[in-house]
Length: 326
Ligand SMILES: NC(=O)c1ccc[n+]([C@@H]2O[C@H](COP(=O)([O-])OP(=O)(O)OC[C@H]3O[C@@H](n4cnc5c(N)ncnc54)[C@H](OP(=O)(O)O)[C@@H]3O)[C@@H](O)[C@H]2O)c1
Image 1: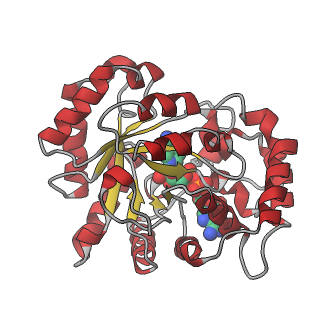
Image 2 (image 1 turned 90 degrees about the horizontal axis):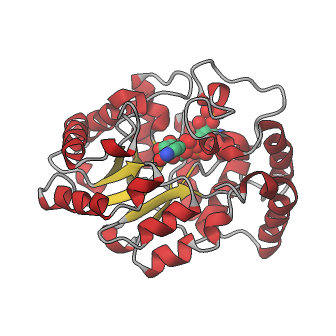
């Protein structure tokens, strides 16, 4: 379990990323979505990450249905996001009126009076640097629409800007074996400020499960097919910004370090917990993935030798592709 500073509630260190329950990862039908949510909950998961834009509300509605079906709904913390439904997605869309409209829609989709946590969904950098953004988020809290406000960001620079602002409960950023830059300052500065760090894309979109090879294909409606060069959104969100073939080769080396009895995905998630991140939110497309991911909270830390070997893989194969960019 994790008790992140300003959140003020205990949550499981392994959460569930719910983008898969909305869209962009091939087809996950509604009953499978409910089975994944319930299996994760039974395995101890109490933190769920979603966004208003995932399937244009489909992911939020699936979580709403799940919460309604559970007698223990108050155990769960649901973090949603807002901003990416703006079309065009520009800084001028981040107004208090839109914040109100967006959060009202998410409250309805989730079937709750007040959102546990709303995060700005990778807004333009200028929004993160604007003090009015934080005043408007504080207004949402004062009005009782949301309990906590946070940000999801693309870059370390953006994270550091948001960490210095008032009223920010959480910062969500990509952290994984192939994305180490946040380890340099973001974690320590966030924790010094009492801000929760949520690590997304922990498996580099599945690359760090070690299951893919040069011939693997993904469905047409899967961003691992259509966003490899950043055609739809930031390329850093797909395979963590690592060119696919480079990632497959490096993931083979990562796989070779997997402790006996573990899966490579479990090692990759444990590596993130070892960095003292508050919550890791792997996405799952099957019940089995959700359950084996949740089990990582009970696995021991990786050895120093494994940490050193994983750092070497990063430095040799991955760093040049990502470190200067995000
Ligand atoms: N801008 C933002 O704020 C933003 C952006 C991206 C993601 N997110 C959030 O972060 C969450 C996690 O990131 P992500 O879903 O993009 O990437 P991820 O968690 O790195 O990768 C998810 C994929 O990894 C594979 N996987 C998961 N568990 C596995 C297991 N136990 N064994 C083998 N393979 C496994 C699955 O691939 P297959 O589909 O091949 O089975 C799954 O679809 C999202 O769901 C979303 O909530 C937020």
